[in-house]
View (tube, rainbow, N blue to C red):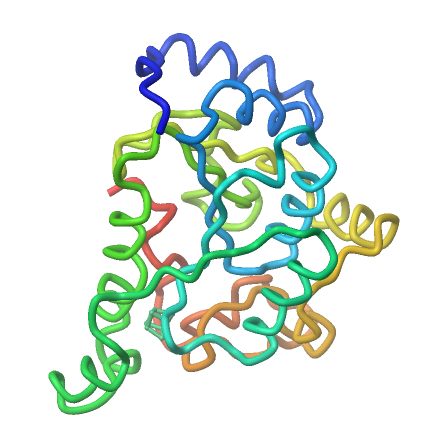
Length: 237
Ligand code: SF4
């Protein structure tokens, strides 16, 4: 992996400001050249992630970027099927990263599932800890977040230091709107999760995701019985 020196906060801040005027493809190309094998990308196969994978496939060196999915054991079958669709369409192999214990082992340890009683702990075990392990030894990761998705994401730079996981975080779509994303999908015929057309604007694990009503926010269907909006991957503490 790359042994590139860590950038300074000032360098990242300046770059991020410059990238506000760049296309996501330009940001991705910079990341590929700057971080090489130290670069990785996490995708939950949301529509934004599928857009980034489509873009990567068109860029020099883009297909060599390591990409992974946090396979919690609770994902929808439609989500898992996208892994094959992405491989067939773009030649990008997405690696599954899993928690150390299986769903069966975890549920046996707690006497049943905990997503309904303690989703923060469930997300910690099945998402946050596996993410920490997946990012260890990397120098930068690509995320598909957009600023208008949650209050935490609203503060995201296009390039910034991720103090939670100790590496550079690159969010090429941070300043894109939902409309920008879907326009790209339609023009470029990007594969996407069919659940998006059944009332699921944001898709996570099946126990914690429901379809939303007209007029609801995009993430209203995530952890609908809790104040929780994030699984902990994109929060700052
Ligand atoms: S989204 Fe729900 S099922 Fe998935 S890890 Fe978090 S609490 Fe568990």
